[in-house]
Image (cartoon, rainbow, N blue to C red):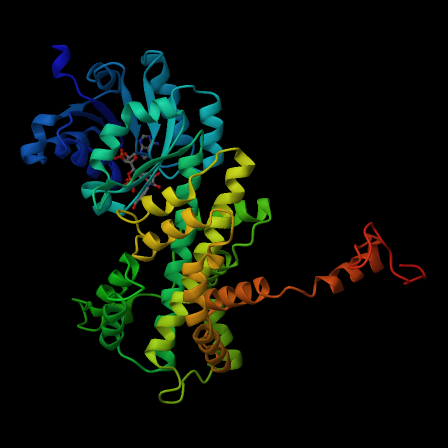
Length: 469
Ligand code: NDP
């Protein structure tokens, strides 16, 4: 084989993401060698690639894949996260040269990426968001690992990434698992964004007796304003769809039991480890877990009866609900960026906060207009909570009363709003200079002699409790 004919990059795993990424790479003028465990998938993939076939080399063994790539080689893994990635690293390493590179582009837990990077000098962990369409036409890519390795493959990654006003959404985040950590927090925020939209949907459906098509119109309207985002857009789309089997609105025939692959839970777990409050994300993860308890919920309705959810006419104008979502969203992102700060210092990464907001502006699931303003706010006020930046503080002043009214009305009528309520509680705690933790400290000292600080004197103190505790 003539050297020049060999592929620019290799890819293992032609599932939903891998197949689309390979086509995207080929579409951008690069030659890709591909391998899949089930060989028929590789054959069909190449056969069905139409005009892109010339840029694809289907390989029937990992050895053949390595031979088909120009050195120094880079091989992307797009296989399930976990042991399958370790198995592939073990298979690949003996066949590769020292300066060849392995790129794990799946949804790895970043702690595993840290471990793999520590044992493997030429390894990158990259987070890819955007689902099937993103992978094919432009995902958002969050890179992690040695900077010079990122630089060696970033021309390809930038070429295939989504584009936001001429800027590619592919950014190096830091060493080791930094890229996968940013992707994990992205997914945690995604859970929260989706949950808050679902809560607004619930208020409209059960509180206001609105039909799916009326709800679709509301989402369409919101998508022309501050809330403009992919998730609001698709919420309108799914609300409009009709079930081809029954002719009923699609949403009405979908079982109310949410699935999850665990990245939201990872976000909450990491936040707990670091002591960073991400209450909106935690509420969203818990809401998915509760949704899965279908039988228990039905039992609950039998025991207590359904709540009288119907709101009085005009009690909650749609503009008020929109403001509630705006406020909740800002508060949730403030928590997400605080978690990224925590992860950054715990792992000594120096994560680039404004660049993270920028890389999420296009291609990924949480892409939204608001992220552009967040990038500017994070650049202008790097050391403070996003909510306190001039821009978002003004937005919160305009909207927080509507969040409060929405959550109050929902609570009065038994409409569950765990994520929006958590956002409001977070806001209320953060604006309370004197909290109630003095009571906690007194209790701790009373039963455990843990001591407390006083407001008027330095040092550790005990209370005048006396007696045996
Ligand atoms: P799929 O299930 O569609 O594809 C999985 C691929 O991995 C297939 O090519 C499969 O080969 C291969 N594979 C599975 N198990 C093994 C194994 N034990 N040994 C060798 N090959 C194996 O997954 P996706 O494409 O959806 O996801 C791939 C990665 O991308 C995952 O880490 C996922 O979390 C992540 N991701 C997914 C997104 C999505 O929207 N789907 C978005 C962002 C990231 P075979 O054909 O032989 O079964």
